[in-house]
Image (cartoon, rainbow, N blue to C red; front, side):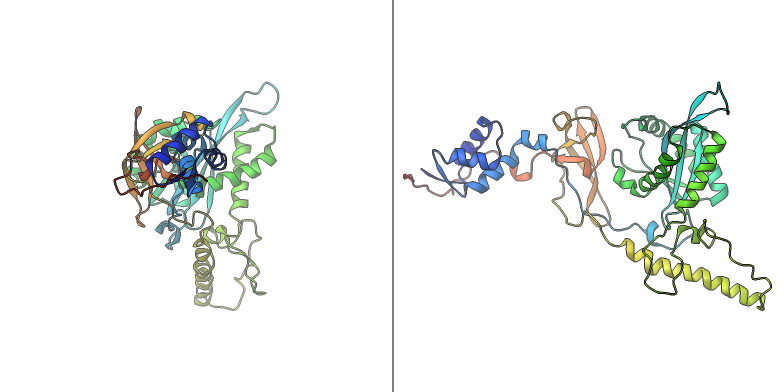
Length: 400
């Protein structure tokens, strides 16, 4: 018996067979259907049936991936270092209150500040996760690096291992931190919850800092002063890394590093020779320093900024979510069948009209999540299970 794949009866037969075979894949579903009917364009219908199955969509847990956005102006506009700064925590690290036997072991945390423009890093040791300790670390940072214009930080919703303490601290003290920053004229921006890819800049900085800490610390416990000194040394190493690949010019002896924008040279390089005895006037020396400074700026614009424009992933646009779509809220510590079901109530598009943050209403309340952590349950064409209209084609019954 020949049946067209667009007819409602054919779709119902495929759905029934798909459930009878315990949610089989398209190949097994099509071979089982062909034992008693012959569907026209049946392979496409088998794929569509497996793709539109709600249970299969839940088990697969495939989330959407919007196209990567353009670089924000904080990344490409010239400015002073740390004018736009990202903040993140890492840890805990175990420290001792003194050397020798009988010492008490406590926790210590790493507070990382990263410059948006030049990827300069500033590491601070924080003795405890409290509002006062964090504000003191902010004051030390501002005193050494200058007052930034704005801070960027995650929302503190981390539930993996020891990061739970950091998440609870940032969540409970976000209002106090914003109030302290507003008194100094600093804008504090929090990224959406459960969206670590929004803060990839400081997440990469934490990963680089942990790379050295795991190899140096091992299982030994340092004092607070020793750990703070270690953080400073690691900061110098990270600020001496090249920002972009080395050029092929034989006259280019030094790569461009974040240290050039802090002190005019890599932090681990030797000091330049003393030029006070050179036969040049003060004006010539000033012009030379100004030339060196402009040389760094030109290299930053010519080499580093153009290197950042390349999209390494998320280059193909996908179907955007719409208001009213049913989605699952992805959670790292739960299997896909246990993810909460919700409906999108509002979207927050960027300057390129691509929505990367959505507000989802569930039975437990309304949550704001990154689109990358939302799993669409049904496509707009999948929500209607009504039969086709009267324009369905006529079918011929025959033996195959």
